[in-house]
Each structure stands twice: as C-alpha cells, then as structure tokens.
Image (cartoon, rainbow, N blue to C red; front, side, top):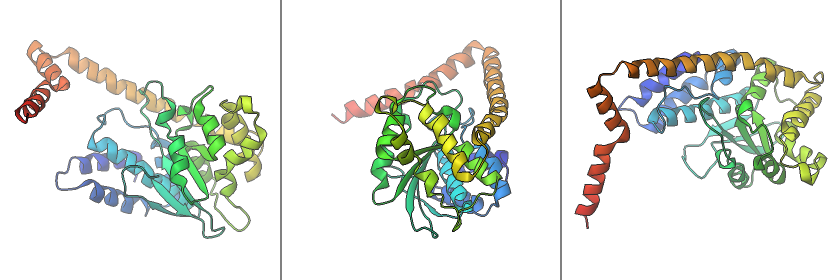
Length: 294
C-alpha cells in the first residue's frame, strides 16, 4: 500500500454510508498493521501532511487523523514495542504502548497539519494534555511533522521540559525505520522518549522556551545515543525537505485548479456555490427549530 492508495481508501470509507467510523478505523488498522517496514516507511514520510482536497472537519479528515495514529502505532511495533490504538475520541492519548524488554510503558499522540495552515498556537500541540494523559505510564511522546514545530521561542518547549514530554518528528521515525533501528537488550529506546528530562538538566531557566533546545540539542543527543556521526540526524531531516517541497507544489496546483474552475462559473452557479458555502439554509432551519421550541 502506497500513500495514494491509502488516501483513496480513506476517501472510500469516509463516503461509505454503511461503514461507521470505528469499523472504518478497524479496516485501515488491519491493513496497516500487516505492512512490513519497507511499506510503512513511505507512509511515514507523507502522513504528517493532510491533503488540501480533504474538506475541513469532514469524516475524511477525522479518519485521516485516526490513520496517522495507526501509522504511528505501527512504527512503534516495528521498533520492537507493543502498542494499542485507543478507540476513545477525546480526553485521552491516541496510543498506549509497552516495552517487553525493559517493561516501561508510554502514551503517544500523532499530529498532522495542512501546509496551508496559518500560525499555530500552543493549544494545537496539546503538550499540557499529554502530561495529564500520561497517568501511570513512564513516558509521553508527541509526534509532529518536524517543520511544523515552532521555529522560535514557544511555550510548548518549556512545557515539554517541565512535564518531560518527548517532542519528536515523523522524520525521526522515518530515520529509525530506514536504518532498521530496533529496541534490543543492548539498545533501550527509552533514552529517546526521555529526551526532555535530559534536556531539562542542560537548559538554563531563561532558555527553556527556545526552539534550539529541541532542534539542535535534541538531535545531537539522538546522534550520540545511536552512535551516529555528529549532525547525521539533522542532515537526514534536512534531506526530507525535497519531498515536502514537491508535496507543496502539488497542493498549490490543486488550489490553482480550484481557482481556475471558480473563475469559469456562471453568475448563477457562483451565487449557488456561495449560498452553499455559507450554509444559509441550514442556519435558517436551525433558528426556526429553536424559536419553534420556545
């Protein structure tokens, strides 16, 4: 299964009136959990970016987000850890997992964003929530597209240090999978999940919100832990920009085609589309229902 096939599956399930959300999620999970490492890797490199053609707040968008959870859970499995994708839709982490080798447990949450998304705020990353969701587990891991993390000072970095939340990118998982990393009796991956605790000891209080704590120091510590040359993780992440730029170009083409189509509308079609977009009839119906109930 490649990324395009996965998107087609999501759209098909989202548009199937006979398939409920949980059944659709199970369908996708069964397929992804059966994929080998070499098939999961391309998905990991793409899944962090929501396609622009998927409508906001749609069933397809919600199913895409759940698919990201499933892909992340499969990543952990391929690293030698047991994971479960939680069925609850709110007030809980998306994934729980455990190491059979070292017996630690963790919660994890997958984040995906659109390339057209405007400035994000700390609430978008739910770092505080990740601390609460950890409960009795040892570690709490937030996975986000690397280049969507704030590129300057942000509360999320200080919060992650204070609460020991691991902030890591999909790109890091791509590196681990591509290089066949696996937890063994000689390699305890808890060092990565505990990265914020290590960084907290090295960071001055006045610099706790600086992005460099994670973008620079975090990658350097992972290099050291994995026995890599200095800057290797940073170099790998940088190499992923090429694919991201190509993805961006295709998304721009999508919107240019939409713009071109709108420009060809007749006056009547333009008015009809605008009325539909504003959901005016639905608003009138809702207000009518409300006042009728008084």
